[in-house]
Image 1: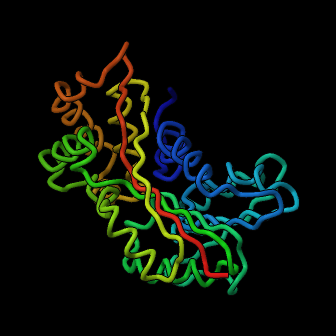
Image 2 (image 1 turned 180 degrees about the vertical axis):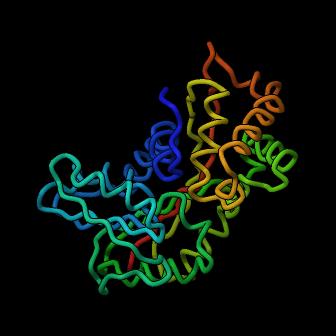
Length: 270
């Protein structure tokens, strides 16, 4: 593994996407089922993994757009101009005020973004507005830390050594019934939520801690504010604190654990 970058968004792409967000992107798209010729919008696209995986599914007659409020993430996403020969479009903008016309997309996906939006209902209403009648939305959101045992202990280590619950944000909207209710309130029909557990394989416990600290800096302010020396110290302390918890999840040197998430979906009334 090459040295970590000093660019949190690039670290996010390099270290988080292969082990976490690529497998989840595949599950998200298995639910959304983009078809050839459809127009797909990836909301809170980050560095664009869902959009990139979706592009070959809609093909050259389709359209794939990623939108994100974070310009650093989009700078990395823009290094991917196409996927499977299909051009990709990247747009800076807020999920609370999507910079697109009404009825302009057939499918909208949002992977691990909804929990960070300050007004979740408004974001879902914006997705509904942008969808064509009969269009569909698919959202993935982590279940709570109470349902993700390893991350729960991991977060406690950050509380102890960083003084902040650095991993709480990604797991902050984990109730499947709340997600279902929000989809219905936003106006989606045929709404449902599936609980999915995905096995994750990391190169080692140590590399997982390092990549989490560096990659999470793209979305966790408490980590973004650390300089390199402070990050190195934090990594060493957390690795030491997590030795026993990690041992239960280590197989032939790899760290193997499951992440539980909710996959919510619905359609816009035709």
